[in-house]
Image (cartoon, rainbow, N blue to C red; front, side, top):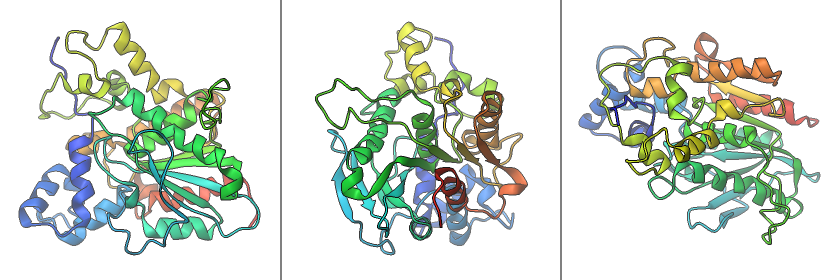
Length: 351
């Protein structure tokens, strides 16, 4: 197979960014600066711990500690058969059934944790009347992305199955997250309902549909062959790895990316292609410090504003309600906090 340039998959770079909240050695900070030059706020060529932490927050990556998180109503619950399908749930302080936010962490499908939920986001969401669910899920290389995403969607089905017990409104559920969690949230919103009315499993009989979704620094599609057409050419100097996309879909090297199996796998996870007139309202946010043109590195390319712009353009064609915030309009803003206002409006509940 002809070698292909695949800087798309964010696994190593975003996992590195996940670690930026901890105290870092000068060597680690230098490595972070090389991957994420935009993190150098004062442009002096040296990345400080404070700059690393600040940049991490703009990327929608949560803190690794739960020290300032309140105790969940349900901690380490299970929403599916896989051992990694674990959730924490905070019940809303409401007598009436509350809307639910399902938070999906990022990390390139290789890293991250439900415990990365930002305390200020949780506090704001609950203050606005939301119940909040945050989940873990299986990673690559154990499962291919086309199996990971339906497994994540089961969290929505599980919540809907327990709506009465949790005092949530099953008709007011939204997904949101950063990076891979953003793409996962959009995939759930765009994909046809996964409910199986004939299943013996009562959770599988529930609808996976959501009423809104929010993406913070997300990707337009997980059909990797569409990236160049949607986002533009990849930056030069990225190592060529023709087997990376094969690992993404769990394809044998001899099958290649153009086999029928590969085409089916790519179509299944093509968020951009799955968008349709029935897709619920979308919030599309990309941090203002990520350049739109001439991305300097892998991280800037996989989180480029062009991903959000491509989805917004498709949503406009279809008449799907959406809000796009990128560039100057995103500077100084926390995408997750901004998403709360949008989701509150779309889920339509009174103050």
